[in-house]
Length: 587
Image (tube, rainbow, N blue to C red; front, side, top):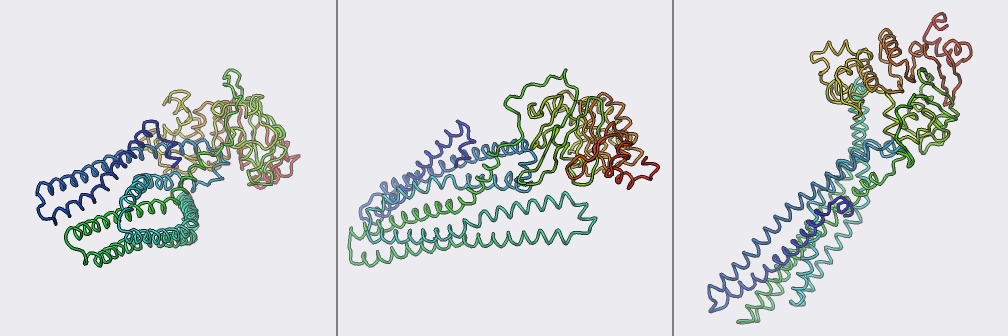
């Protein structure tokens, strides 16, 4: 398989070649055993045979068997080691590739599918490599050697063997035709089950709050039942192979012995003895041939599933990441960084979408200014923010940071200048210090005093100190042991700890009470007075003190100015303000 060979080191490739050579030696030893059996059988039935000759033949046969066993053991051990090593490298390559994916690639594959490809599909390849690599080499060699040895045997027996092979081959082709179309469908169902499971676990609070267990269960049950039915159907076809081959093998042995009985009854003396020994030897060889054929067919039947898994992994690894460093990207000069942001006639639409999410977006934010963005749900506010750190790329127009197109920066340099707080707060498993200090990104050593300072500005210090472990308190995956407001304050503190030139807050104050919101913004304004800040908010109280406010409606800028200007000149903004504040407060 190409994917295995691709990830093997030169040393592992040579070991693989050595394993194949050892398998050839094992086959030669195993196929020599029936000849020794026939020799022993003849010696036992011949008058005057010496015990030493029988013992010598028996010792040879035992030696062949022991050597074949030891070679098989060694090759299996080496193969398992190579398999584990190669599959670990594939997992690492998959992880590193997915880490580089932009939102476009992630949405194209889907989270559930990516999880399945990194787990089930790699496990499928590992299982195939472990269990089928040896039969893939061993079976054809065994079959070739056995066929050469039985070709000079009784023509009738050879004809019977050929007929048996034809029957088995016909069954295999029939099973193969039935199973192949099911493989892709099973993978698709597996992806959907992973997606549904992840969705249910991630949204467990919503499921509980809306008492939607039955809805979730029905959706999962429907997919699971379809998966089970198809899986049973596939396994049913595959299950036909074992009994059919056993029936053919035993039937062929009986037919050879029956036909031999009719011939041998008219023989006498040495001829009868030799004929019987040849018949016993032929049946042993036929058994080996059938076993080799069965092993080879088992590989063939597993191949569609493994090939599909290999294609799915290769598809991820060969995907060209849409957002990456430009070929002419140069190192950023920290001394010239001011944090100026400018949008010039920006238009944006998602991949495979005909409609623009944003059109003709033009504005500029200078160093030390605070820009607020407000608008209805789905109007494109978050999309504007995502274009700055290149989580998405513009479809037309350009986004400039310090007068340079963001596409001309190295991604690491661009993103290291930004403190980004997403709409959905996310905390990593660990402790509070590791979560706030997460933003250092290797640029400097984590300093606990600075973590505490960032937490104080982010208004998280009080509730952190109220916990038994303080800053060393455990944080569960996703921050599930913190409230929404606490998570927002911790993620804001994380952005502050980075000490960037640009702050981006995507509706990051929504879970805070009004007092905490005001206190936090005042502390942040004092701390970041020389920084560029962009805030997306739904609450007028959060954004009304900004230097400038953009009003977005259906992907267009419909208003721009201070709170007072917009109350007089922008109906969309005025409508939002009056829905939250009294007329006196709004004005």
